[in-house]
Image (cartoon, rainbow, N blue to C red; front, side):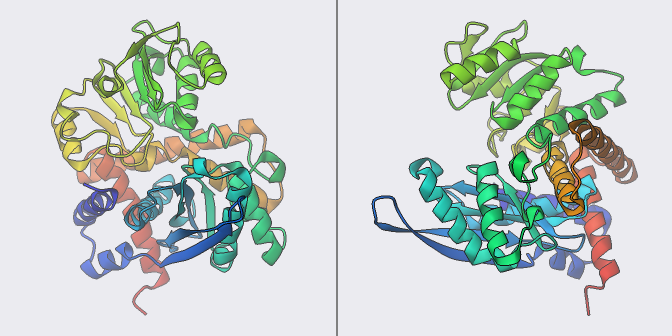
Length: 411
């Protein structure tokens, strides 16, 4: 099941639980605007090449639209649509004043030089500059993009609109980026786990963890677990997977990865089959790589008691059902990985105020938002007698529907 179908299915279930009017449902599903642009640039060798850029702006009932821009060969309009919609519900769950958007360019960033990437980013910005903005739509980095990409967008946008640091988030610190932004998604996930464990009177130190995906999110999550006395017993990324039943020394592993660019040949653990990782014996499984990794083929073999979704849509609905029946507790992506967008919101607030915060304040506020969101989700679970995923979806959907009705949507 693709991301759009899965998101729509969760939406329909939540709408049914809330008893939403069918016309309002239709109105909430339809994106506000879909943009498709051709970005033609000269390559370094003088030849011309054209790429297709997308931006889907889903909903702005609760505030400016917000969402990442990804550079990936398979930027598919359907997936961009699903992720834009997911951002609408995610920002509502986090209770930050945004709607959802998502964008991307269908290219392989690895095949482009830094100057070609800059040209491509600037042309894309030129094509959409009048449709994004501090109070309209605020992009951020995603797969294949980073703080440098945001710096180029900021610079190009500012040529048309004057200095506007709040037009993008995830910027370099020197251009108005927020301290704590880099760690935000991984750290937010840890605060989410702590809020969940508090329900059971447990702590991170009492558990073993397996992390799939050792990029930004996985690394910060692993560091934070290690610092809190939790045991990370297996990790993987595209270069391979390693395990150590006594717990991996994360600081040593990070040095090894920095020096060698790979997890392979790490002396503090033994190699394992990356496909085995998801069904490895552990307390908490954290998929933070790609979508759809937990499916009907492997769900029955998952041994973890808790799954924390660091990636977007890592669990197929079929797998969701199998895991629920087994009693596995899933912290859904729409909540678990919302730390990134929450600190993006803090960055935007700092830019608008022209007043930057200390990192301690950023992390303190992040913990507050993640903890409050968990309590709000639990209330929805109690009210509607549902699992955490539906608790989060009904919470997000309810907030957006309420804002839509208050603004008057039928006129």
